[in-house]
Each structure stands twice: as C-alpha cells, then as structure tokens.
Length: 425
Image 1 (cartoon, rainbow, N blue to C red):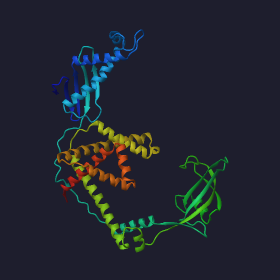
Image 2 (image 1 turned 90 degrees about the horizontal axis):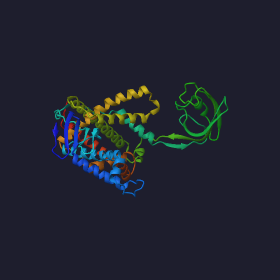
Image 3 (image 1 turned 180 degrees about the horizontal axis):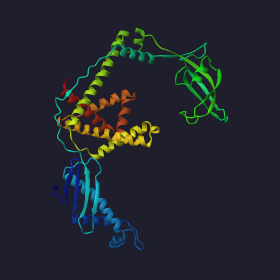
Image 4 (image 1 turned 30 degrees about the vertical axis):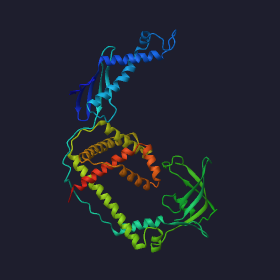
C-alpha cells in the first residue's frame, strides 16, 4: 500500500495487476466547507411558506432538506476527491470506477472506497528473432483463368430479346399474381426479376416460363409442404399467374485484345492477363503476411502470462455477440446464444491479450502513427466503399472512430515490426 501526502488521504491497495482499491478520506474541514456551500445554495433557491425566495432561515432549510443537502455534498465531493487521488497516485482508469462504502456525517471526515480497473503491468517476452514459417506464394494458371472469367462476366451486356420467347439463362421481368386455392385469398401482385432456369426457382416456374413472349401469360399451381421455409404459404396450394413484361439476354464479350482495351486497364489481352496475375500475387502475399503475423502473435501470446482487465474482456465479448446477433437474429435460439457467449468470451480474452501485448511492444519501440498515415487509411476506405473522401472523413469523425482507426494502424505497424525482426524458415 502507498499513502499520498495530499490534503486528501488515499490508501492504495493492488489486489491484482489490473485492479486498484482506494480508501479515500476528505478532511472534516473540507467536507464542512462543502456542506456550508451546498446549504447556502439550497437556502438561496428554496421557497418556504411565509418567506420570500432565499429568505428562509438557514437552520430551517437545513432541517427540512438535510438529506438532500447531504446527498449533494457526497455527489460533489466523491468524484472530485477520487479524481485528485488518481492523479496524485498516477493511476489511469480504463473504465468508470466503482464507488462503495460511503461514510459521511456532518462535522466528520468524508470517507469512501473506490475500485478501479487499470491496464496491467507485465514483462514482455523476448519478441525479436521469433521463428516463423515462410509462406510460399504460388498463383496457378487456372486461378488467373477464373479471375479473367469473372471480369468477363462483369463486362456482360443485357440485350433486349426480340422475335422469340423465354429461354434458359434469360433475365425476365415478370408480373406475378397469386391466389390461395382453398380460401380464394389473393396474394399481393409483385413485379420481379427472374433468371429463367435457375435451380433455386420453383420447378413449375421454370417449366412454365420457357417459350413465353412479352405480354403473354400462363397459369400454374404449386402445393407447398407444411415445413416450407416461408410460413405464410407453408402447407397451402397457390395458383399463380405470370405475365412476361420484358426479356433480356446476357451477352458476354470474347477474351480479346479489344475487350482488354475496353476495360481501360491494359493495352492488350496478354497485358491484362499479366496484371491479373500480379494482383493475385499481391492478394496472396497479403494473406501470407497476415498468417505469418498471426503466427508471431500466437507464439508471443503463449509466452505471456498476464491478468486481463475484466472490463475490456466484457466489452469485447459484448461487441462480438452484438455483431453476430445483428447478422442473423432469427437463427439464434437461447442455446445458440449461450454457446455464442462462451465462444465470444474466449475470443475476447485472446483479442485483449494480443492487444495488450502489441501495445506494450509499440511503446517499447516508440512506434507511432501519424495524422498523414491515418488520412491515407481513410482514403483507402473511401475508395473501397466508393464514397467521396470528405464524406468518409466526416463519418469517421462523427462516429468517433478516428482513435480506433489510429489504434488499428498502430497494431498493424507493430506486427510489421515483429515480422521484420523475425527469423523466417
């Protein structure tokens, strides 16, 4: 324990590396001064029968509002005394302190306890010359071919069809009406885009689409099983009428020099193929570097024994659970939620441990992230999301995410440092 020599006495205990317990005492004189100040404030504001505002006797105000005055003194003194004590002891909380065991009587010192979570102090394991298996980067010919085919499909045009009906592979705009056979209840009329012949379509739809021309209609019925995924039609027979509004045929370009030039990325097809290969190499190199970085962190983390601040673990676990629930809330049963919470807890512990480790290495090596580097990352994010730079900057500032972005960049820079100082084998 330590005791500061300030006017406010504070005894500090460290039950763990990530927790501090403070016993704080405010001198009776200072507490009395705060009480008199608060009493005067109440007396100036209250209105009592028979007295003008602010003219009631202080003794009467004190008697009638003693409990409120006392609570106000506590609410004023406790955070101020705690702030002064934390500053004097150089304690930096990472969460809101928990105040307890408040003791105060008029004319006596004001006492309370506070529990504070802090970042734990720990010894870093040797973090240079970590052995890491080098990942070989190989791009196969068929991978290049697949990427080129994806580009070709993205370049496809959709040409209105004339002189024939719907064929498999056509994109068809339909007017779609439905009626429940048993109750004669009409379903809402919809206009929808359908890829004729697609395996996800109902088979009767695919069969009845073929050959239909614009403005032609056809009717058919579908009987749905009781366990159908759409509850509103499960176990029912629906009679449909479809009407073709328009038909478009997908036309993909040939793999040619002209197509490569039209993309605006290459002089000819051979040049485009080379650039696609280079991009695939870059992607695989990034993945390999990420994997090697993860291996370095795992190695160091396994060497590190540190008590994790509970508040950081809980915050990280809660964020993971929220993200999962928002992604697919309808699929989560109470059992799934319990299992998800357990997995999130384990993942959160590892994430917090890794973050503490990397932050301490960054501090030891005096690594930092400049404002220019932050802006460079925002530019990348803006380009990736196809939004103006000013909009991206405004959004990050509005949501208070600049510090988080800067911290992520610092962690990335620290991992790069570890890899630069690793031994590849």
